[in-house]
Amino acid sequence: MTKPRLSLWCQEGGSDKTYTLWVEKEGNGYWLKFLYGPRGGTQKPGTKNKAAFTIEKAEAEYDKLLKEKLAKGYKPMGENVPEYLEVKEAKDAGVRPMLLTPDAEENLEEYIKSDDWCAQEKMNGKRIMIQSAPNGRIVGVNRRGLECPIPLAVEKAFNGVLVEGSVLDGEMIGETYYVFDVISLPKGDRRILDGSYNYTARLNVIDAIVKGVGRPNVRFVPAYVGKDNKRKFVRGLQDGRKEGVVFKRMDASYEPGRRENLAKAIAVKVKFYAEVNARVIDWTDKQSIEVALLDGQKLVSVGKVTVPDKYVKQIKAGSIVRVKYLYATPGAKQLYQAHLDPTDDGSVIADAEKADKITSLKFEGKEEE
Figure 1 (spheres, rainbow, N blue to C red):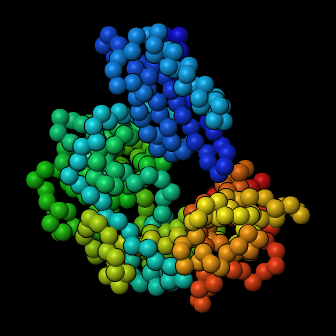
Figure 2 (cartoon, one colour):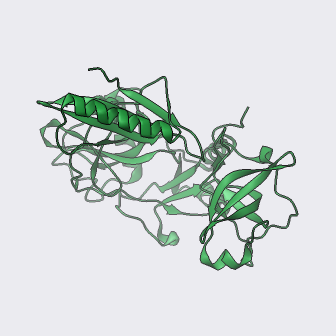
């Protein structure tokens, strides 16, 4: 094979992503395959051709695809991205995840003080369930309940260890799977499905499963109880620039879907947002604006912000607007999950004559050096 497995990297316009391409022989033909996704995150696989190529055609298409990616700003990177277990058909796996009900940061203390709730770190990964299916298959399942690719390293960690019928819930970050719940136990054991196991009991099951796997890329997401422990833990997450915190009722059974009524919620997420005053450079279209902060005396773009219809009339090019965001990406300094931050009277215009300095940004994990 003359064409190498090549991984490319692109970081511009707020993105930080990879694209890997290679030619693979299957039977008597050749296939041009690829992976793409955020750098360090879950990579999605694909195949360019619907019918087998000759080796000459496959290599010519490889060169064409590589040329296209280089023209879009991609550059070769030194390390290959993880290999993924290929899923040829997105079948319904028959399971659905429990989704979190969002709450505001000002309500943190209610969950911290109550002994009914435990606290966990909100992992900044891709929501994936792991199912031990018939015939020894270890299957990844996305939040829609469809089979999806998972890293081969994770599949190998569970293969031969996770008993058929078991379903775990967690998040995938790179090649590491973080387990925070269990949806189903092996066939014949219905204590989770019938609601007999509350979260306290499920935590013990998860801990035992992770210890049984015994691999560093399968990790248990610890839960903190007691108001002093929870308060210290939450402050540590905030100081560490983490995305947020999850609170779960210790007495609740596993319940697929989301409870929209916060008063009846059994699993809640609170994201830690920072605030900034940014100048509107201009409208990028009818529904979004590009905003900037000051770097010395110069305005530097920090990305786009979507504008709901009710705020459109307030904003003009040059306006100083109130923006909330989770963190800024180092290097590109783009705001992640940015949105307008209205006051109680519905105004998104800031009480400031100038934009904030770019040095005031909160970066993911730590301050930029």
